[in-house]
Length: 599
Image 1 (cartoon, helix red, strand yellow):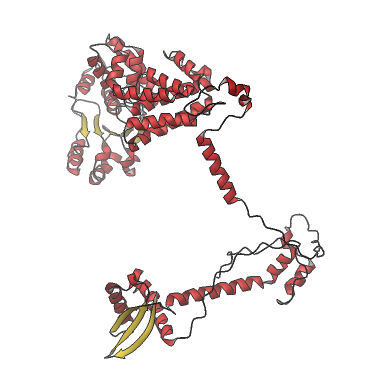
Image 2: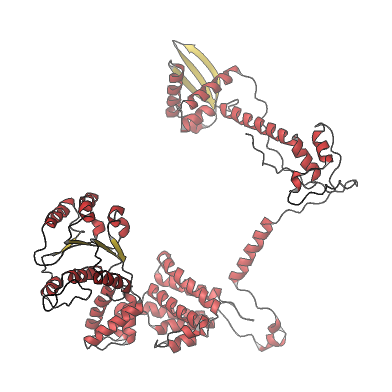
């Protein structure tokens, strides 16, 4: 139970105090000890001690018959079920049928269901009742890597423990203990690489260690482990950081070519680079927090002095984001090279230097006063400033040219308002008089400066001619739309059509429509419109379509009606006494164009 102290403490206290639950759920990623803790719990419940008189304990002896049988998988009262291969209701029913029988040799019967989230819904439903109220001698232990897929009805019946991924240092310390007990020589750098490659899984760490021992012929050497894992040596990372610090673009290209020749992973290079930058950032920000036991502490100290803290933070972010961009590059090495060149582009240039070619200024330039000139900006910074300036220019308010007008007396000052009452709720007498004046009367005063020109109003459609046939067609279209008998393109066809002729014939009717858009004059749309019209008129209606400019269509009539309502709403607001008085009281006030909407 390495690295799972919170679970060990909770279970130990429960076993010591005899406060046992009937169902336990252990969650966590692969290789963190879910199956191991279930077996240890089964031994704690059934351990009898060396003398055979022991009881429930938080420290099973591991030597008694039940402990040895559980370790070897021969204990009949401990049943492990793999839900990935036994996920149906039949397997669960068979398991539950045996739960009515008391333990054969043990104190408790323990059912351990691994990867429980793989069970079907019927299987979950079959075990709910037994899981909620099992016999006193039965304990359920469930394990899963995906608790989100477990029904809440099951979660509510279990004590849930989350086994955390193990820290890299925890894995490394445990590997060190294992190597010492096995009398295998291991370099600290090799164990560090294995612990990092395990990604929080102790099982993966032990598997990789076995592979590394075989690869190294019985010893764990850092060079062998790095070769086995394909990890990038720190010398390559040191070369990259030094080249970035010196602005040496040729050195970065040579470093990438070396990585390509050695067949080292570009993604692994960025991972190692991010790790190095993280350690450099810690040294720069909190020097006392640096790991003194790190064999490469001196190297990180020297590299930390080469970059400014803000550059280290920026390069760390670029290295993390660059790993996701490698899949989009033509090949991973070209993507790696572009990312490293990006580090150069974002590194500020010194006086007299250029990005990627940071040459020292010549003595002649220094003598002519060039050293006192400001440093040229990198291309990226210049581009950013250009974008900012463009955005500011686009969002700046337009400058209104003042218009000369005849001098007018200053407007009467509004009366004093008591504290706490906003000025717009108290209007002077002149404002009330202006509000009660006739609409045709001119305002008493004019503002000192001309108002900014109001935007031009939207053009209003010319008055549509009176046409009884168009009126009849518009009514029919509205009725069909209200009944939802025409939708989508068929409704668009009806709205954009001008009825040019209508006649009765043979108990039915024939309608000729003029439609400008050719895409609406399809046979399928015409037949559907004719079918909807026939249902409305309750007789057979035939529709003929012709091309040409359509006028007085239902769509145009609707638009004209909307514009009439808009103009009426604007006139109503402009003639409102309260609005007139507010405009008179506050010379700078105006009605915002486009803010009026008819109800």
